[in-house]
Length: 286
Image (cartoon, rainbow, N blue to C red; front, side):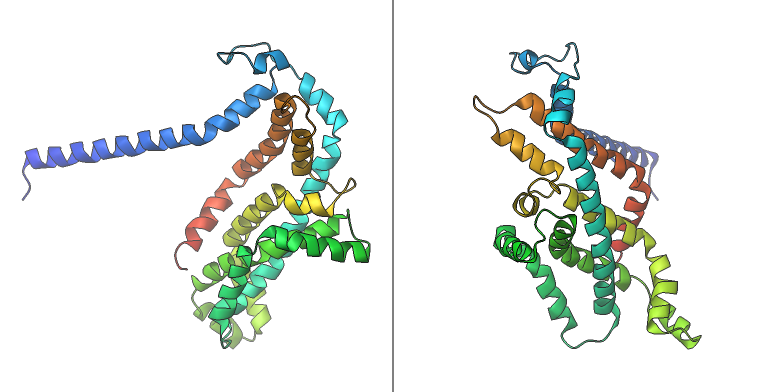
């Protein structure tokens, strides 16, 4: 039987450990969030205030940079293109990847594990090794600078990611669910769409969110496969970074960077409930 002294010591150690974890979490959060905070802060500074030493935290904010580059770099059109491409590639990848993940998790296929591993390892191929052949094929077919071209290109690296994640979600579900449905007269596809997909909705949504974020920030394929009509926000940032004579235009870079990051942050906050639920369920078995 524990004494009151030992019980008090245990509570003290537990409380101290909890405080240390909280302080560590706060420190890590500040470390990761400060660059984003500084980018947003700099985007509202005048050019003369950006390079002051020591840096200014109090200044008169201005929207001059936003107004100038929203017109010059056609940011609105590029933002719409990014939304179209990220949404299209995310939806296409979740449909194809989820079906493939279900097949690997449920259907007895000889060498299924090896096949799945090979698909996952395909993500290790350097993107530049795929970008040039894709450009040559797109040019031959007359599909350069098209939304559909970027959607298909992004799907090549999103589908393996979706497939492997969804395989884990499907493995976490008992086989008895499908077996019961098929005994009641459902086909394999009926059991999938009527039973498994509704149950796996948190996993599907969280995987879709991650896929859209990956597509949102992709640069290389967008830079190679587009010119003007379908170019995205990351291409605009690359253009501003390269269009300098006396150094980087930090005002423009931070303004466009803020326009790029803020929608992703807002989107993640809106869907964080489904994101956390999906990640928690997907971690039960892998």
